[in-house]
View 1 (spheres, rainbow, N blue to C red):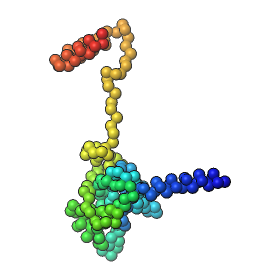
View 2 (spheres, rainbow, N blue to C red):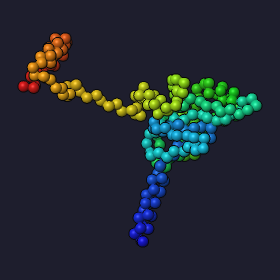
View 3 (cartoon, rainbow, N blue to C red):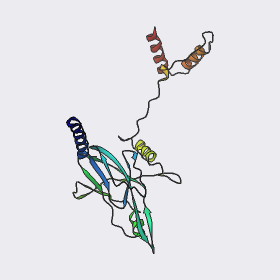
View 4 (cartoon, rainbow, N blue to C red):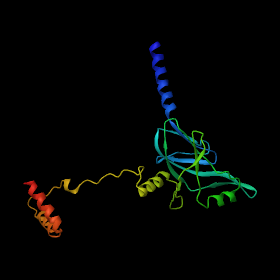
Length: 212
């Protein structure tokens, strides 16, 4: 019984230790977290995710303004395109994305028509600006696949979050099966050699010499 209790206590201690060292990214009311480090954060009407725990390091955050605002005599949802920014966080850091104070639909439309100075608060400190870029999308529902949108953006930027491209196998290392009685392979090699540049011919001759 003592051994079982000790194991359970150790396990709880490990979980507590991991949680205690995690940094946290939080979006205040009026904002939606859409993705962290290229991974979509699934949101729903009944289960809205406002905070996400991450390890210390550089992280990429995607979010949008999403709030019900007064428009005439009714309330209507005002939603922006997604914004993306990167930030360095240490273990136990508490990052909060701040929201502009807007009350009317027309006010929000005018505010987001220009470049927005997004601000965050780190560890409850003073507000500081972040270089948040508005993402572009295509089609009828341009941001339905937010992971693809983010991946495309990162690829174009060539940043550290860009998807790793798998290198194509070298043609020279590929094996082919030919009929010894068929002379087409020799003819193909001759044709390629004859159409090669002087430098390419030199490299081919050097390669052939190295095979002997």
